[in-house]
Length: 161
Image (cartoon, rainbow, N blue to C red; front, side, top):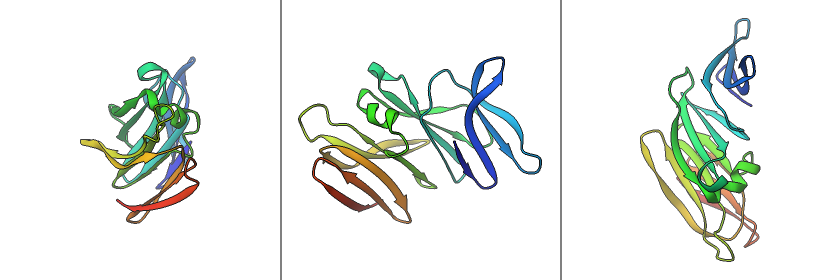
């Protein structure tokens, strides 16, 4: 669940067990369905006019990052990777968003410290902001900076967007 600009968003049931991304806003907080979904959504963020979420069950049991307009529309896959498994399990910690887009971390591919921090948005190809992360631990965004933890190195790092 997430909220922003007077509206709440969550994965709920639209009709007879069909899961969908739902929204409700004032006055009256009447709920409505924005987009049907058939996978678990462990994390969701509202930022500006966009709604971002991590959805489990992508490439090789990894996860995908989606975006759509907060008013509804067609969800767009921004990124998919088998290395987003931690983001799918702990999406609250490894995924952030602001009006410039979404920021997410991917796991290393094994004993190598090749985890990464990405940035992407609708219509903008994902780009790596930082590579060589040993063990992603968390990510947040504020103003012109992204802050993340590398549990492998035992560090907290701040980078410009």
